[in-house]
Length: 302
Image (cartoon, rainbow, N blue to C red):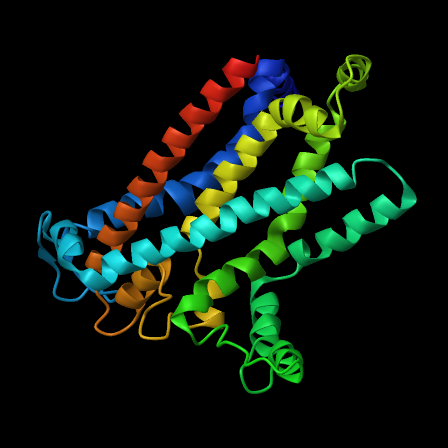
């Protein structure tokens, strides 16, 4: 028995084989909770079925064709893009500007970094509820302050013109701390000799920012853009809690529409699965295009 155990340990006692020991648990979790459900939804997308698996019938591509005739589904995709256009650039810009401002390791800067990171560790549910109360037309502190200045407060969460941008801003407030930390790490890894050389050549702060900081940060900026875009295209909880998709579905996002179709009566799980795959394909295509563009830009500067 000891001899067999020794042979097993010797077999795995190499860097290449030992790596699999650490990879296997994560791989099993990914297979069980990501890849198998993903394949399952692909199968469901070709059937007319509900969450109770009653009255199952094969439809082929009919669910996918139905999406392009469903104006509410198309609008939910457009709302998701609109939300992403607000959320992604704002989060990266805010994170970048604060990372540049807080790059020195002074006590005050470290304190500010900690404060800005606190919303990241808070749950989206609690943050959404708090901001919904603050921005409420009836009891909101923000609307009260605006009214005290003699200005009629807009319906931040009830007016379709302001609702999605407002939700996007609250999401930026919650998550920019993570972007700040990533970009700050990138800035601090830039060689000081580059800035010293630029100063010798007479470069001012503006030139150093656009000619050194931005080009050197492109990998980090690209990572933030990609991850934030993927997250924003899957937004659900913030919109669901703050606006519920209203007014009149004007803030309903793609994932919220999938949830309503699949898990509310009449429980059209097959159609919801088809819409989720369409969303997956859209995110994958745009992400790959963004990745190719960002890699091209990185090669130009390198």
